[in-house]
Image (cartoon, rainbow, N blue to C red; front, side):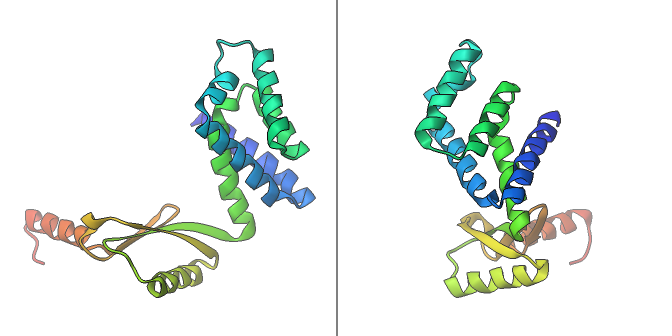
Length: 183
């Protein structure tokens, strides 16, 4: 839990700087790109994060990577600060928090829509519009398929789950029958 608090603080700090200089979206892209690079290149991640190597050598590797990818001075300074404070292992979590905070700043919510079969694009758009009206925010919808749902849809917006799947209805009926309730 402490790690999440730490990650949230770093993400908020970078977002505050981004709000002040109007570069929050640029910082979002740069931080996300750097985190994706680290996830893709495991050897690079080891060279920067592995405590078996000396801190100065690891920092030199980080500085070289920062120079190569050509990110802004603010994000470069941020990455070096995170490294110097011994929090580099939390960079992925910091990025996740930053993405959420930057979405909030823009008035955007990310949601998922899971259906048993492929939905026509006009239905997906209608669902997105309805969710947008209900939340008052612009919705970015990630659409997935899960044949185990049998039918219906399940939508997730943050912690809110709207489950209209046949699978969950059948499970609810089964539980009611077990308890001896009438349906």
